[in-house]
Length: 357
Image 1 (spheres, rainbow, N blue to C red):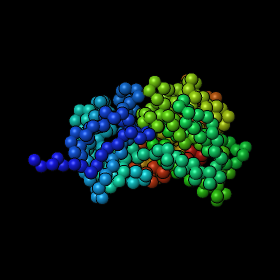
Image 2: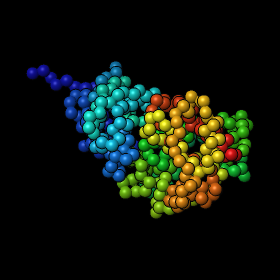
Image 3: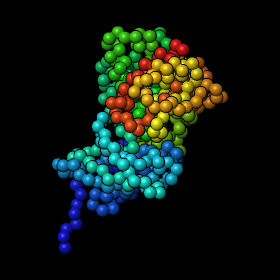
Image 4: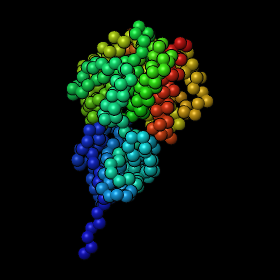
């Protein structure tokens, strides 16, 4: 009898940030063919777009791999008809055939380790590298508190003392890595602006929280800080949660003129823009019109017309401090990592221009 063929590729999901995380949720069906069942801390399909596993190719050549991804959800399957393979800034998209709640993809993985998911990965190692570069460039790092599980909540500040403040936050929702890549590029831009004696750090003081929900990121959550925990973006400012309390305290101490919350979403032809001040929104959109980095339509509404929500950080910034408050959700669809980084740099510059509207 012929020996059963073996695949040089295995799937790992026991690392920090993986989704699914439990052993039984990744199963080898045959050599080179795996069943993967992504997990949601809410138990439903809303925001269930967090897929993060590793393909480890032990051969010295690219290898084929078949994935059956059981999303256990019908409503959003039109957003799950592909997977990305890669790491760092290099990612390749592969189509996935959707049948019912399952998406099946045939992918090619290079030698070594690659991530597989719906979004490029930005993890704690990448955050640590950005923190080191920021410190070398003159940012002041503050330990503003710790999360429910004891992880550090870091704020990075730069700019003129006594200048009006811009409070910038990313990664409230763990799967939305677009915000992290935008912030990474923004840190580089502000460092270069400071080195050149530029206008941004002369006119503003920036307080940046690059990873607002480290517990959720570590657990591979989709929206919340943990199973049964708060959605920090919308509930954390008045929740009985260590991270929420620390971030609410930082927001109060900062008393910002502008509040910019960078998210991400699964719409393909639209980028999200929720705004507190219509005039600021108009200035922002007009200043970016015609730029190919912003070719998608803006989809969103005026949050300033809504009643105050004490737990919502955007609402708290607007109602407590009068801040011009934007939530921007760029779509990954059709964008590379360098393009998302460009989006972040240009979005911050346009936001600062809009603060004077």
